[in-house]
Image (cartoon, rainbow over all chains, first blue to last red; front, side, top):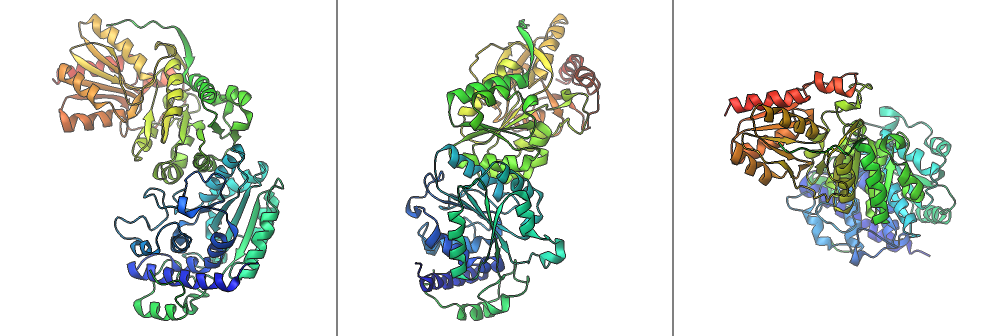
Amino acid sequence: MADIQKLQAITSQVRRDIIRMVNAVNSGHPGGSLGCAELFVALYNEVMDYDPANFKMDGKNEDMFFLSQGHISPVWYSVLAHSGHFPPNELATFRKLNSRLQGHPTTHEGLPGIRIASGSLGQGLSVAIGAAQAKKLNDDHKTVYCLMGDGEQQEGQVWEALMYAPHNKIDNLIAIVDYNNAQIDGAVDDVLSLGNLKSKYESFGWDVLEMNGNDFEEVLAVLAQAKSALGNQKPIMIIMTTIMGNGVDFMMGTNGWHGKAPSDEQTTVALAQNPETLGDY
Amino acid sequence: MKTFEITGKKDTRSGFGAGLLEAGKNDENVVALCADLVGSLKMQDFINEFPDRFFQTGIAEANMIGMSAGLTIGGKVPFAGTFANFATGRVYDQIRQTVAYSGKNVKIAASHAGLTLGEDGATHQILEDIGLMKMLPGMVVINPCDYNQTKAATIAVAKHKGPVYLRFGRPSVPIFTPENQEFEIGKAIHLNEGTDVTIVATGHLVWKAIEAGHELAKEGISVDLINIHTIKPLDSEAILKSVAKTGAIVTCEEHNIHGGLGESVAQVLATNNPTPQEFVAVKDSFGESGTPDQLMDKYGLGTVDVVNAVKKVIARK
């Protein structure tokens, strides 16, 4: 049984890191990062099997994670650091010159934990499917995870990949879509509605689960349910409802913090809501 | 001018198909993907031999490129095949982000490049692909000239670590390079020793340049002829050595004058040894429907065009 309190403590530190990172360079994407904090903490602390101290690009006999909406890099960087991929002090280099922590994640600078560049949207699921196919060829029974944004579902390539995976029985893959109904220009429902996403995925042949991504117990239960459904000749999709900006009251319930950094005063308020638990970088 | 014996006629895409099969036998990590053009890309022999190592993506090139990048993560060596148009322009951002910038060992196999695709017309005749691909940091760009060289290039590309753009064509063309040749990426092949002019040709234009060399010899013009199958990295040493001797150069390619081999050669010359240069290339236009030969003639890529370019550049010396 997972220690939810411990996970929540890690999440509090991750939220602090996100706020401090984007504030320090006055750029980055705090909203989606905050909304996905529980998921990242759950995956890297409870769900995935991997060796952070000895990161290998090929990830053989390890679970693998791909982030398709690369703009929420702050949450990933913080969780990668706290899970032992690199020293948390390196978070201070985020988006600065000569850093491995580029604005959007990349393999180019050799940051452990990252296996593909992302940022230009719609591409991650295809990469995850390729990685899952390679695992099958290699007789490697570990799982590939892929997180996408909801706005990103507007990209045509996503639907190419959505069609491919069920047809080819990619059943070592758990895809997750962060359904916060917010993108840069407004609510997803207003910009370009996704319609009934669940029935769309199901009609393509996916096994679809749903969860509240900001509720640890539910996240852990649904991820466990997803894992138990692996190997059933169908790919798995989790529609994860989240609140953009979760954990910082003035950022919640608006898309205004999608790609905007808080001021120093706002940062003070945000940090007061998220106590330091593992030590600030 | 040296004589090159024609040992047969075949399409370069068949050379790719044969090379892919052999690369597959050499290395169990070699896999192939195709976006609904298996017959055109001559991939069927590979599929018959290694059905589990082939991925049919349907008409979904973006997904094919992303999947190829993903397959490399597990140590696979993917050849992603489709027409050159759909292998480059259609998926430029996918190649840029997940292949080139991510440094993935993906081999882009691009058939039906250039005007010689023929009757399908300009929608399918890409003349900008070399430019698009050579601009990507780390991307190797190869355009072999006949069946034997394309087969050898495919085998060599599978052994090379890093992203490669391998460009070949549709029509049946003379086979004049040796069977089972060694193919060294980035190493130009010196076809003829000459003194009056350098001709640097790639792809289908290599044979046209040989024909032109014979025509010019009749008029007493001696051609130093280079078959440059690799456009990036360019064998600048071979080019500079040749122009030091001849003092004039003609570049020949089945590509737009912008962004192609000629432009890469011009950059080498401008920075090392400024030399008069003429370009046998499509003059910044789209193609149209027609037979390959008709199109090559109409768009200035015929033997006579190489001959005329040589005379023009010699006059500028």
